[in-house]
Image (cartoon, rainbow, N blue to C red):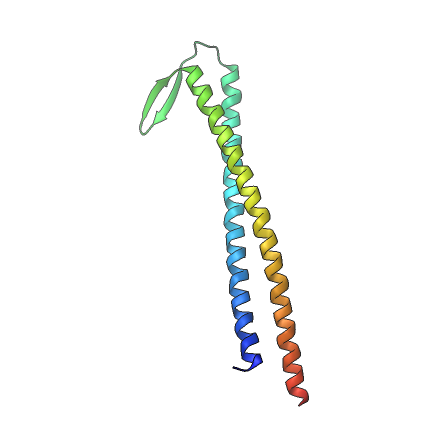
Amino acid sequence: MSSAAALQKKLEADSNAYQALQKDYTKAVESRQRLDSQLQENKLVQDEFKLLKDDANIYKLIGPVLTKQDKAEAVTNVDKRIDFINAEIERVEKQLKDLQEKTEKKRIELVETQTALQQHAAQQQKK
């Protein structure tokens, strides 16, 4: 196999890997946005709970049915959910940072392969 064919094959592989990393990054960004939305929603519920008296009636929607729930239990559930969402946000942030670094490395590799291919083509034209 000539070096031009090898470079072309590497360019295709690098390009495919770069596109896959970009796709993964986009999915992670969407996941992060979804988690932000869930966090804000749960913080609103948490704020509303603070306004309620201890003997207030709280109902939770389970399927098509509203079920009465103890305030302390509801507050605990929302607090746990917020903690879980914050942990997930932290995990996704690490994933985003990792994907960003990998994408940048692959982009540099892709540019280097393109440059090598162009230089090889220029050398072939000189012959």
